[in-house]
Image (tube, rainbow, N blue to C red):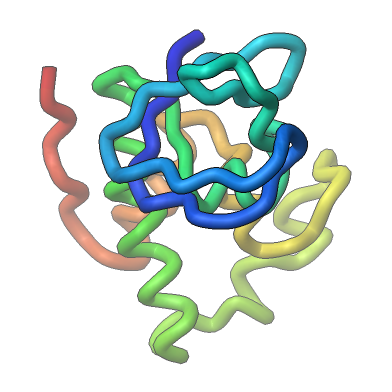
Length: 126
């Protein structure tokens, strides 16, 4: 699957130092992202993977819009993360980090979660 850099990645990765601009296409193979020159960047599910790259699909762009607004909502203190991200609400989760719970929700569930907290979600393009 192809991924796109949605937020500039400037730093050290598996294959050395990278300076990948917004919009740079990268590829995924075996759970790892690779730069256009073939060097390994990071695991898809690593913090660097989540913070800088997304699938290069309309659904990937849509999910990123939802996630960005939800991140701001919780980081600003407007959302009650302690109440929203409990083990009781996510009994099958392996990782209870609030961003991980959001990132791994299926798109319909993420959309419903967004709607319940922030109202009408943005439209999916494409």
